[in-house]
Image 1 (tube, rainbow over the protein chains, first blue to last red):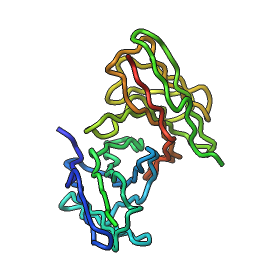
Image 2 (image 1 turned 180 degrees about the vertical axis):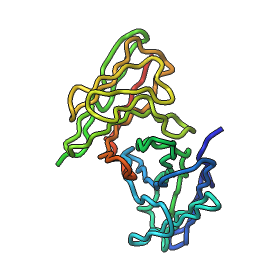
Image 3 (image 1 turned 45 degrees about the horizontal axis):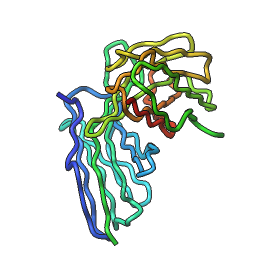
Length: 113
Length: 115
């Protein structure tokens, strides 16, 4: 059983559409991360959240701690947004603050012109 | 700053051969990690080093060893490669100050094929 579940697994959109990717987790966390992996393979961190909402350009990430759920939204999607989006969590361990991450399986997003 | 670098980028091994994957970071980070990424699965932690001089097993450590050579470098060794170790390997680092939530910075990955 994976502590972090993402949906959908694959997502196809037309340029300009509003995109939502969902992440749910089953453990106590200290932070949730959204990462982007481009076709070349490199992984970059987009957001780190512990509450509320963050926005960077056309990307918005929200988290609901009570419901153990986060969403990543992309407004006005563009073909260059095509990538794998990965949700990951820092799990709270009593007495430990180690920054280990547990990862979802990723959502493959393809945006067509 | 180069960030996190990994060598080699690609490698083909025969079953039973050994090799070492190298990772270095120039961000003065305390913590370093080795992950593997397989199709249909999330990144899985192989080993990590919370600080210089310490290493610990992650989720999938069997068949691997690590060395934290100094604060900058963290290597992953496959002593006797098996086809099940065909994967993409990522090294990452984070600052890790006690009580902080950490952003991890990833290297470009090493694609390993074991025949």
